Every structure is written in C-alpha cells, then in structure tokens.
Image (cartoon, rainbow, N blue to C red):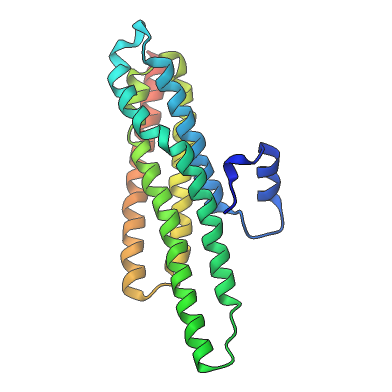
Length: 210
C-alpha cells in the first residue's frame, strides 16, 4: 500500500500530476481530509488551556477527539482509494476467453467497483462528521485562528464533496438497486455538507465582524 503520509509535498504533487490514473481525485480528497483535520487540531490546541478562550475549551476537546485520528486515517483512505481504483483497472484487464473467464472477470469487476465506492464513501462520511464540529469551533475557539477554521472547513468540505463524486461515478457500475441506494445516500450527505459548510462560513464571517 502506498503511504502517502510519508511522501514529501513535492512527491505527492508530482504523483498527482503524473500521467497515471492513480493517485487521482479520490486520493486527493482523502489527503484534503487529513489536512483539514490537522488545521482543526491546531485551532483546538490554540484554544484549550488559554484563559481568554475558556468558553471554547469543552467544544475544542470534543472536536480534538474527532479530528486527531483523521490526520492518519485520511492518509490511509488515500492509499486505499488508489488501490481500489487500481483493482478496478486490473479486473477489466482479466481474460475473457472462456465462459469461466467471463464470469470470473464479471465478479472481479463488481467486487472491485463496490470497493471503489465504499472507500470514498467512508472518506465523505468521516469528513461530514468533522465538518459538523466546525461551526461551533468558529464561534467559540481562539478568535485569532478563526480563519484557520475557515480553511479547515474548505478542505474538509472539498474532501467530502470530492469523495462523493467518486462514489457517484462508481455507483453506475453496480446493480441497479444497489446503485440507486448508494446514490440516495450520496445526495443526503452532499446536502448535509452544503448546509454545514454554509454554517461554518457564516460563523467565521460573524466572528471576523464582531
């Protein structure tokens, strides 16, 4: 498994820019989740223990418990996303000379496509949980870092919405009932992310203007 967390920024950038299909958007979304989580952790750490921001300690501690594991999990999901897509490509390259080959290839394509949907769906769900912490963090966290909450929100929102696009495109390769159910879940998460993203930005602007 590729350890994107061990890449330098330049190595990661160049890997994205290469002519290979992976790493791609799903990986980038998961890395964005890790980066957004790291910024949220920073704001929490700049709030907890500071007498001026005592009103924000409890929520920052709560947010910290959610964001901290996502710094690593985001990188794990990034690697899993690349591997899942590679498995789809490998399945399509399987031989189809005999009826047995055709059936095996069909099963492999379905299994790999299902995995390629599940990984970004997890990225999106994890991102949404973190995103929901951020409006309150913008309200009660260290005011000097409120713009960092804004950037964290943009990254986490991009992670969520970007991952959902990957779920959506892979859902087309699943059986109808399964694909329809998955797309319904995509729509629900996307709508929630849109609403919460706006809440974060409203809280940030209110704090900046107060």
